[in-house]
Image: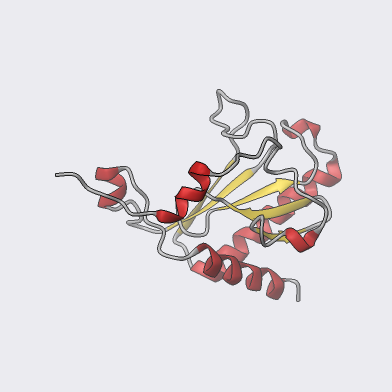
Length: 163
């Protein structure tokens, strides 16, 4: 039996022109943030949705400056990055009520970094039983919320957390 997973939105990625620049080195023009799926910015960091999420609400916290190693961050950049990680965890807890979270950085190619040139922290909400038969048998994740809905939900939570 051949199973078919229908995902027409991927065609644009497959046939579209690929960017040659670092995907995390974003324009300073915040008017383009929603196009790049940037949910929130601070002075030295930003939160962006993962285009290929492991789970619903999978976010990345990224320093603005193009660095590949933790020790390349200044003390102020490091503090800003990890304060934004803490805030992002709280936003995800409020928005999705997960049972737990995975936080991690893959440093270097051998460490599993898909984009090794620009440091970034993965924050993945987890729920008991979230590894269902689709993941276990077919190696496929099911993301139940549209990107646009998730973007709006999370952006609203960041805005509320500013208060």
